[in-house]
Amino acid sequence: MSFFRTIARGSLAAFIILFGARNVVAMPKAGQSAPDFNLPSQEGAPVSLKDYRGHWVVLYFYPKDFTSGCTLEGRNFQRDSAQYVTRDAVVLGVSVDNSKSHADFCAKEGLSFKLLADTDAKVSKAYGSLMKIPGMKLSARNTFLIDPKGKIAKVYPKVDVSGHSAAVLADLDALRKR
Image 1 (cartoon, rainbow, N blue to C red):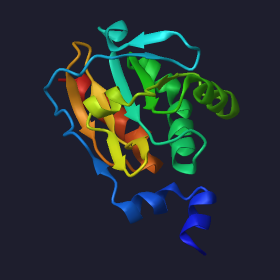
Image 2 (image 1 turned 30 degrees about the vertical axis):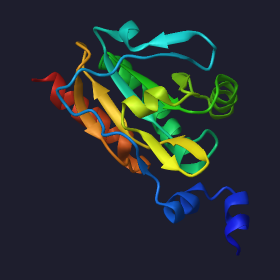
Image 3 (image 1 turned 45 degrees about the vertical axis):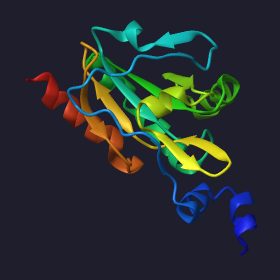
Image 4 (image 1 turned 120 degrees about the horizontal axis):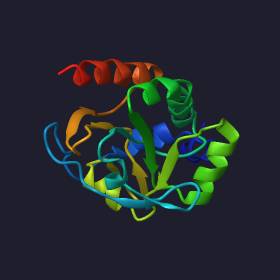
């Protein structure tokens, strides 16, 4: 199969591997203040990190709506949404897709948490989660667990989506006991 057919069939992973996508800026580390942001959600309403001061925030970056890994990751966070609520935590997803794409993705997959449209990629860049790919901008699959004071409590680089939500919940439990 040719390279272009592979891309046309949605193999974003092959494209990223071939062109050696990498982060443009270093990721913030645990203990640092989480960079603030103000982005539109799938509903078009602005969402700021400051809106969630006093609560735990799971801020996850993902490459693209409607792709297999991103769908599985979103479904897993949705499946565990009640567990996040009992831990006073909110899940926020971020990609460079626009609000309309996020709204369609949420409707198709039954996602009730907020997906934020980082169309200019400034927030992805601030979190060291912007992949550098010739002619494209995509958010890298990284997650940040932010404590109620706005500090980064844990960083999850290059996330494997299969058990990610369960791992975040376990870490959230451990961090809340401190």
